[in-house]
Length: 75
Image 1 (cartoon, rainbow, N blue to C red):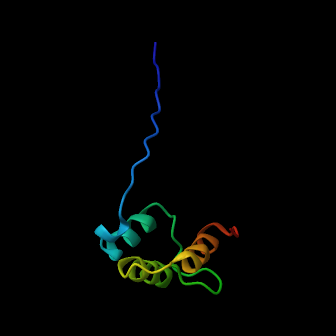
Image 2: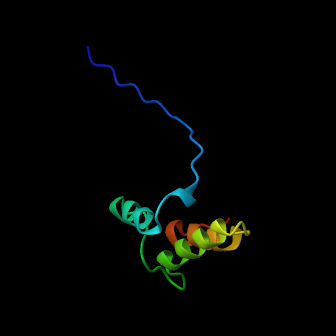
Image 3: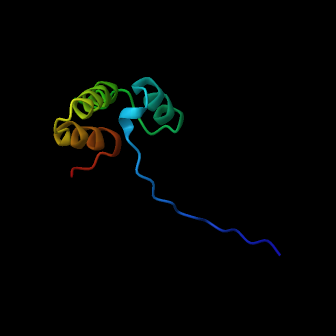
């Protein structure tokens, strides 16, 4: 008998602890980050979000744009 078990774990991660290029590389390896979609360049948005987070500033608007660029969905 074969039994498959899936476990879901939620972890708080500070994205500021990762290099931007490493994050982009990981997302690209998963085909989850098109580099350019419509009017938004995902790589530039990730850079912008990273800089805003690093400086403790609000990054909601570029994050919404990134979600739209990657999923095509509006928040």
